[in-house]
Each structure stands twice: as C-alpha cells, then as structure tokens.
Amino acid sequence: MTLLEIRVRPEWVDYNGHMNDAEYARVFSLAVEALMDRIGLDDAGRAQHGVTIYTLESHLCYRREAHEGQPLEATLTLLDRDAKRLHVFFELLDMEGNLLATSEQMLMGMGRESGRPAPLPKLVEDAIGAVPHAARDAWPELAGRTIGIRRGDPGWVV
Image 1 (cartoon, helix red, strand yellow):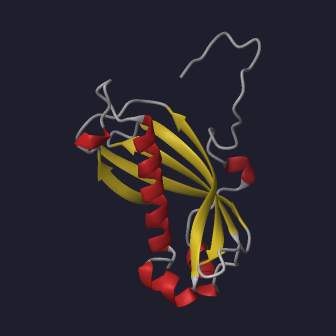
Image 2: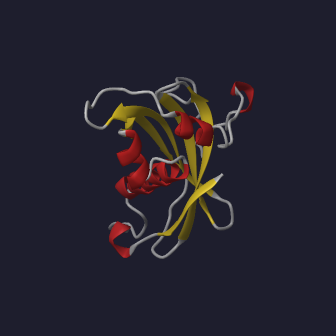
C-alpha cells in the first residue's frame, strides 16, 4: 500500500551527494503521519478521539542511495497489531521499484492528555482493518531482522 510520494529535497543531500541517513528517518516519519491520516488520526481525529500515535521503536536498513530531486514512494505492510500497538514495515522505493531503504516500527496509541498508552478508537481500528496485513509466514524478507555481526559471513553484501 503506497502511503507517501515525495522528492528528495536539496537540504536533505549531504557531502557525499546523496540523501543523508537522517533524512531517510524523516521520510519514514512522514509516512507514519500519512498512515495516521489514512486511519483517521489526522488533526481532527486526534482532537476528536484524544488519541495519537507514538513511535516506540524503529529499525532502519539502508539499501541504495537517493539523490536530489529523485521521486520516492513509501509503502506500508502491517505486520501485526493489538488494541494499542501497530507493528509496521515501510519500504522506500524509487520510481523504478528499486528498494532504497526499509523501516520496521512499533507504534503505540497514546492518550493526548494523559501521555499514557491508550487503545485505538473503534473507527481507527476499523480503518486499520483495511490496511494490507501480512501473515507471519508472508512477511517481507527484511522484516524481523536484528542487528549483529554474524560470525562466519563472507562479508557484507547487499
């Protein structure tokens, strides 16, 4: 499911001539905002329900460079959910469909006034039901990764 289409802005480009690593995180953050809009937690929905979404954890994997002016597309796969949390997987693609980066995230519903975990409202839950959900045996290949040096690997290969 495509959530966001955006171009690499000039101020996102670093001294190497491509998008700075922090800007990938920015694009994935904008994708979370697009998800919030899609499921009814836009400005009006947050005010109406008194609930927002916080990012609890994020795991970024960088696969290819992005360059100034390049159009990008962020897609979403819902990996899991419960009453308060969403486990999501974003892919950042160029317009040829090449994978540039991924971001696996744990998101949590939070009460806006209490600042405490809160269940997502029924209308939001219903909207989440329309988001593509991958069964555990059909997760994207890069989902569920951990960081570590794998002993015996011949080296880092993309």
